[in-house]
Image (cartoon, rainbow, N blue to C red; front, top):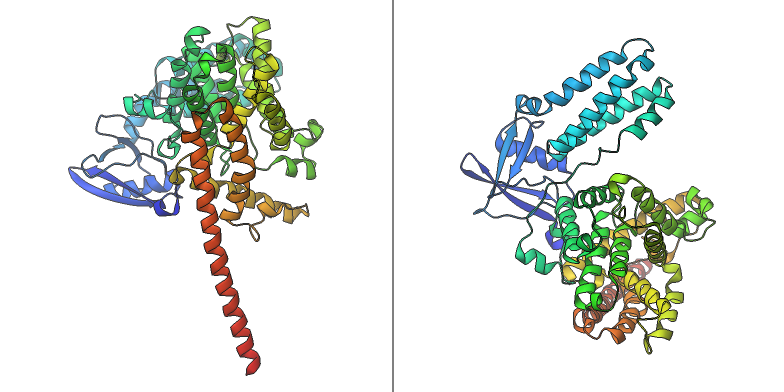
Length: 509
């Protein structure tokens, strides 16, 4: 998603040596874009395509795909049914044979060993043979359907035994992207533009952060487990306008940039750094797109479960540790119980701190400590970590205007979805979420002036180096939105006078 000036994307394709220009809206679905490419190639619209850049690397076909130029067009390779069949034949044969066995009436008990072995072999091949993500996902669905068919035979004990015998192997790895030196350097800065990257690239960037901070080496984290965990994290963020995986990435990337900019590894232990990064990654897992106020007013299952106390943040924590409970996704598997308990408590504390209902309480506590801050005091350090994740969670306006403004559009879209639902259900509606009352400038000015700037200026007392990189951009953003509000007010006044003149003219007649 981009700003209004970049509503359309332009991609150049190499079609048999001829350069073909394709223009599409940033709101197009991947399916729509693929059909456009098929049209450009002159092949049927349902043809499967592979998109390759100049180095031969695969490019994902979606609205966030990287820009290119006429000098560096993407090569499009149509995949025939035969080619796809060759790659899937091995797996389809196994699945077909197993399915034929199930056609025999109620002989599940006799097939226990055979089906278990076939599933184990199939899942192992998914992992070892390095198939593309799309093919693995197809196989994943086949495995899921197979298990559901087994469950429908009322043989629940077999399923439970199967889960114990066979470790989870249905979380595929994602393609490894080579990060350039420029990208690695840009990742350390608050100005990083996440809109230019597709999910697989963002996953590679997150993986790089854990390696670069020394967390993988210092805590002996299995690199394959790290990959599996990150992909599972991606799968457990919903496609909300705002609270989605790209937001998760931005918050984590801002945390990484603060760690680098403020030299936090000189102040904190590596366990603290691990907690900061992991809490940022997990902080909005499975967010439903409707905030705590809606959950409580609508008496949702989450609100009932958590007694109206930070229902969303408690849910994010629960999902995070459900993922860690899977052995193949547990990056903390090498920690002893006491160390894991420390990490778990630290991560929960930080995720719960992102509830904006607690903003005043947390910031006031930090203000009382900042002038005499003591890095040897555990309470002081915990309070600082809570403020840091809060800063990162709401840090979009720290970024350049062209990166920050699309996030405002996304947030307002999510707000409007909630207020529309609240109106339909007869629930209270917050004015700042009502599409009939709020504008972009009015939404941002108060938030920047009374929430963002005071918090970042307080952190600046400990880390003066953030003034130029973070606080000054916030002040400039505030000034820009105040100018926009003045323009809006002037235009509204002109419109009001026009309406009054028309009304008076009508009365004279």
